[in-house]
Image (tube, rainbow, N blue to C red):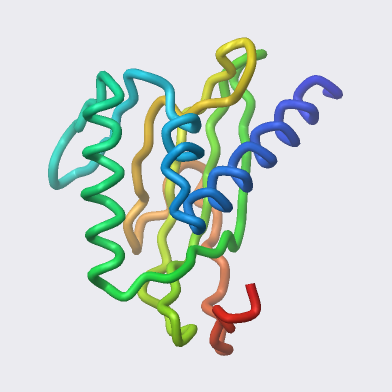
Length: 155
C-alpha cells in the first residue's frame, strides 16, 4: 500500500507542475511532460498521434491558440484522482476549470491521462476527455460548479 501511495503523490505532483507550466505557457514544461509518442483520443477525431517533437510543438500551438481565442487566462484544478496500475504506470483523472482574465468560466472539463514513469520522470502517454454528462470510469461525481468567480490577478 505504501508504494501505491507514493505513486499517487508523485503523479499528483507531476500533474500540478504540468498545470503550473501550462498556465505560464511554458512550452519546455509542456514538451517535457509528454512521452513520445503520445496520443490524444476523442470521439469526434479519433486518435491523434504525436510521434516526434515537431508534431508535439504543432499540437501545443494549435491547442493554445484554440483556448486563447476563447479568452483563456488560466486553468484551475478542481479535483485529482490517481489509480496506480503498475510501478511505472497510472491513470490520472483531473477535473479542470478554464478561466478568462475577468475570472469568468470558459469551460469545466474532465480529462483522463495514462502516465508512465520513464525511469526519471512521469510523462503523459495518452489523453482523453469525459464529456458531460459522462463521468468516465468509476462514475465519480464532478465537483459542484463554483458560484464565485476566480480572481485571475491574484495568482
